[in-house]
Length: 453
Image (spheres, rainbow, N blue to C red):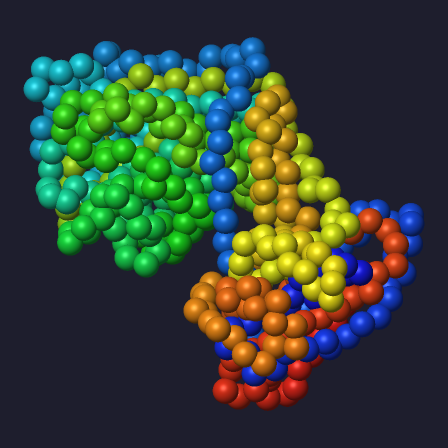
């Protein structure tokens, strides 16, 4: 596809059978409707991919301390442990009973032990009062220690944001990390130790066993059965740090739709790293953002570990919602399905073919108060179940041989393909280049293409 010298393409191109100029026409774009989105869709069975962005945390405005707790005393004002056990925590908690307790292990410091090194445990605690996220940004920090137990250890812990009332009993532990059985939308930032197969990312801790180490963001799903909203493997080995007696510090900021997650530990010179900064989907908590309870949970299943937190801090400050800004509308450039940005000479004119990224995804972040998230103004529309691949070449039979680099990468799906690009108002000649490598031809029902404003 080309927009009057704005180059690009639509579809999947590798070992093509068909390539050529499908359509060239002028489209008038009214001056009073900026910015414009041109959407291009084909039912050829091709499409999209994914992306992610990490950055650094912004300094917070003046803060109100909601809770600080060092767990040196068994009484924890402002923090509730519902369905609490009554023993000394030296044995496994009975089935269905909260396994969390404030105690000491081996005469160490007082900590909130969410699980001991026993199978099938589920421990949890909630802040007593809710936080109004419609007016406040909230920052939650604590040290966590994961050590002992089985090899590999299991399962992990969750920091939970839950609208409406806090539940008296959590029901689903193991790989569900305490949130799989919740009866309403939630948001959690979880530390995962157990590899659940294809739904979990590859991490430096992976091996022959079911070991993993990553941070995941979950929302309204069962993390033991369904993919997470977002994951990051830019993490230390949680269990190795804990077994060495070193804490890992978790720092989470929620500021409107802005989520930032930072980890720090002295273990193996990891230092401090921001592992996630992203925009949360609108209404992620089901419209209950004005009254959210904060909780922590940890679980074990057929494997186990001690999982404890210490030095819990919850602070709030006036909300400074992030600003969403679009990339500058394209005056040149276009769609390059699956590949990097390329500058090619086509018909004697130098044309920049923009790299293929999801339209509307984050292209850059300017951290501040407020943080500015800049969104991509060109690329494929996401959520079409896409995949990426490459073709080694050479590719023959092109009417424009200089376009061969465009056809060496591909994004495809079995659903459809949709590309969008924001352009200034004007008149544009649109060229659509396609090629395909399916033995059945372009499509049983024939090729379809469209350009809409």
